[in-house]
Image (cartoon, rainbow, N blue to C red; front, side):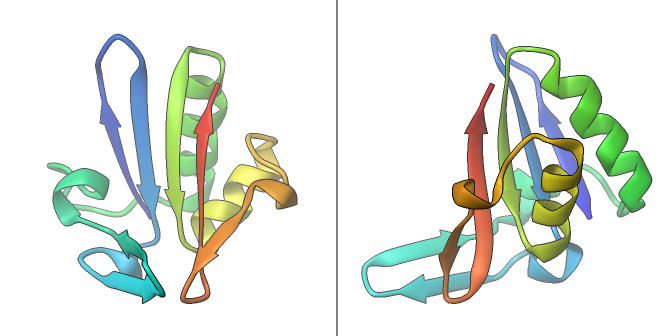
Amino acid sequence: MFVNIIESYRNVIAIADEELIGKQFFEGKKQLDIKESFYKGENEKTLPEEEVKEIMINLSREDATFNLVGEHSIRCAIEVGIITEDQILKIDEIPYSLVLL
């Protein structure tokens, strides 16, 4: 998974499964665009699941927004308690969630 932490008055944490980076998905009028510049940022490597979970836990204690895309990213967020099943949306069977803490 790629994690991009965008620091501003409220941190934005963009997390996406590696295989989805750079792809677009469509369903009717809805579009999901997993832009490399947003989800990957300047990171050149993926992070292991445990490290991603640790980042999620630590940053969920702050005033943050999470943008999560992909099966692995969503599963990690559920496991650490950032989201629940009813907060998962899908476009073309790709799960995503936007969370404001």
